[in-house]
Figure 1 (tube, rainbow, N blue to C red):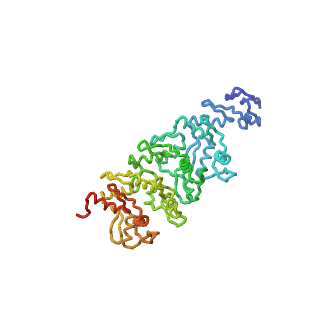
Figure 2: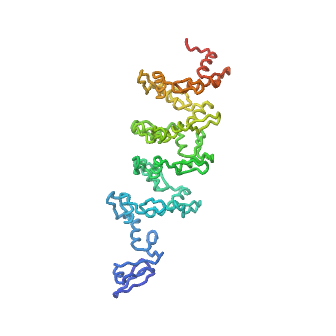
Figure 3: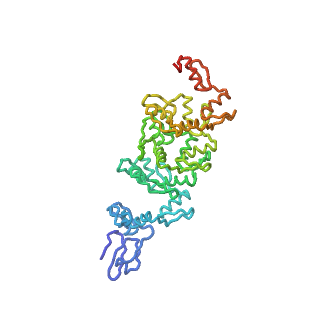
Length: 471
């Protein structure tokens, strides 16, 4: 008598003077072929009589148990003939090959989106239904996938079982490690079919596509403002809640994101860890490096739909558009003056506070604006980068060259809206307007006398110090 050792609880099939035992719940079909091992048998619904003697997991079919045991043995007998990757199950190989073929046989009947695996479709459909059947038993948070719960629980336990073998950094999820490794390898396997730009993750590609479509799917339910990225909405919400979570232990400044705090600290440490592989210039932020590289590639992917002007960075386009709309969303809470850029507001406030946070490491002189420090440093190096093609004079800043050229052209693009007088520089127009308003904002700290122009104050101060311009 032949006996099946898988289960002690058996029923017996007798055919042709032989008998064979099967686990309870197994129904015999086509007796003759069943006993020769050629037939098909099945279990009652829910029955899993085949048990793994290593981990105890149960299966409804012996073939499933056999495949499962490959996991413990490390056996991967199924190989991809395109890339050579190996798998322990044939079904895993079939799913993998769809990466190469691009086949997506499963489609959502609600939105039409296609998927390479049925499980991905099932998970996707929960985005329509809002179904989150998997719950964290610690905090009660719900998730659409069981794997999400497993990864989430590591927030509570602090577990990070996935380690980068290059830098040693640890991660709570394997997908996070895969994304991280692309920093080292430079791999960007996801491509935009509109402009050809490549990305290291599908989420980055999806976010990038909003540039082309103009889509802003994340909306603030308090003020109605929309955003192209969920993280931008999260940060924006802190404006309403007043929440600043991350504090700088050097100056006390608060930030809504830890990454912003890390970037901010580079101001104190003067660390610039991001290097351009073309010219070697270093930057404190990766985004600044990305923007800088457009100088070499001359890439300007962002265009103004009003005047057609092109920009290398989306933020530059946003700021530029305010020149058309007149929007100045950043008001000074001291004097009420508004600005189109936050950085201009910060610089402006230095006039009220007298703060000069930018220091020359050669002579120690301090400045209220970083651009002034950069220009000043050229006085030490003698570096003058911009040349006038009319007279050959050189200037440390392109803006200075533009202003200088108006001497040759006679151009005066800044008119006074009160008297119509024209000026070649905006600063001269602002000074001129003080004659109409009577505003005298420059005060002598010795005698208290006020002046409408800074140059007049400087001249006046010499009367106290008896300093003479000409000797």
